[in-house]
Image (cartoon, rainbow over all chains, first blue to last red; front, top):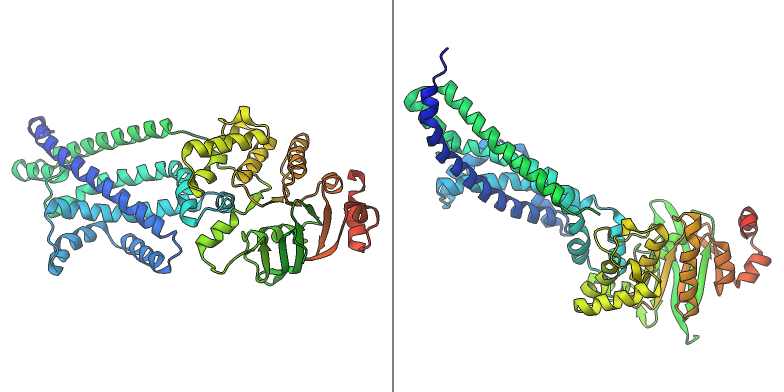
Length: 217
Length: 251
């Protein structure tokens, strides 16, 4: 089999546009997923049984169903109940809701993993549960969360390729467009893999730098 | 009723599962008094101390500190949090906040619980670190301090809330032997200043020489209480006699 370099030269700049969209989708979904996940994680630590149950149900649903189905649900099923989102926002919402569930679990684990004596010491100086969480537990929990969060955000970036299924013109979709006109799946999918690999490697590198720059105690 | 009674605990009972850990324990502490609680491990002394400021919730009994009935009414979280700061609590394992400096550890309560402005909270923290003679270590993290220094920071943290009484739960048990004395000296100075203290301890010299009163607990009850001289020189309860015999070399 001949490797067709000309199609690679043709596709490389076209795919660059796709990578910009992949980055846009990932960054926005990351931010929303973090906010949603932190909120859900804190809710699962609250004393309200209703809140804890709701978070439990949310996490169970996300873990128990494929991401592709979740994307289709947001894109095709929500319009039935009157919520019509454009492709970009439907995709972003699906990715954020998906990663939010995992981030909720990371948050719950990290905060719950802080030694019990820290809570008792904070209670003993008259803090309420809310104060304990805010001033004592969270400041100690976020550092051990970083590696797990990085993992999740990398997964999210890779998962964004599934948004090609609802015609978000991100990297994978851009590649598929070239394939449909030039019929060079081997070259293009290899190129896509390389692009994703470079993107993820850059992300991992950045996260290790951030981790090293964080204070220890 | 004697007017200088500060803490009155009446018939405190507590079970963990099937096991009855405290069986109707009553104790009265007067203003300015230092009471030590001694006893074998498992006798319920730590649990009793933790019931006093509601780190454990007693199953039965009542606790009064001054005019306050601890635990309500109203039995709200806010009221309980407010009442807890009337007690200082010093833990066996210090439980300092590792992400904060010594000064920030001590200032956290005044700043975030009492709502003092930052400068005022830090001034108060500096005052209390000075009281435990750690001014020069104010900007170190707990991990940079020795165990004895960490425990003194924990004492300063308790002092910073200006509590009416301080509860000590085996404050020297987690320390290397050469670091015990500096903590005991700090506690002795507090007692001399008139601080009301309840101290669960295995330090019999402290119990004998600093305490106004010694309480011996066994099997979830107070088996004997009195002056240090009475308990150590003429123990009546056979369990106390046995307990002291085992400690003989130390006393």
